[in-house]
Length: 210
Image (cartoon, rainbow, N blue to C red; front, side, top):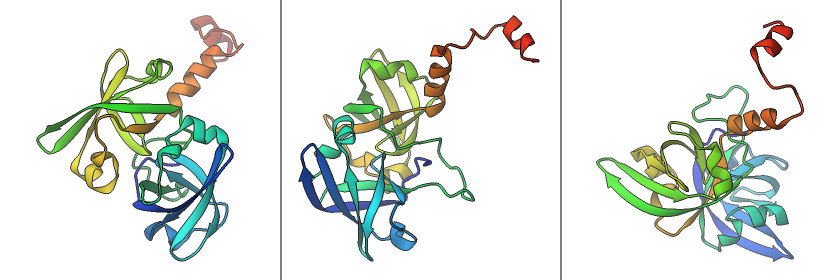
């Protein structure tokens, strides 16, 4: 589990491609302080597992399903990436519940500077729009953000100066692809409503003791 608060920007030092899969080595500094084999790291919003590490970098495997459903295949040697370690049980929860399980890929369609903020409109697949709401949460490339407006096939987010400086999202421009994770609570709510359990009604709640 992650918070969507990017800790560090690293860069890809090696990519080893396999049939429909990848192995990435990423150089960084801050998050190596306590890293160990088996740790979960969010890389541009994708939860991946550390297989090997040293004092300068760590390596992860990217399985075929992740390659297909994220922007991992866009990475090249030298590409910079957002990094976040899994949230410690004793840590502050600064963003929102982010699982690192990407729901799809969005495309930036507009960028606008507004005083000290930068707003970006991101086109989404129609299957993701049902999870979007004004003032709701969204993870874009692993960055926890608030949805400021919802269109028929897009959402608009606004980046404060800190987010512009501490993550890669401030640098991304029109036409670039980004990993999207919808609000986890919205997805769980939908799943509950789709289950075989009785429809939640006043009488059903009374039967359950509410």
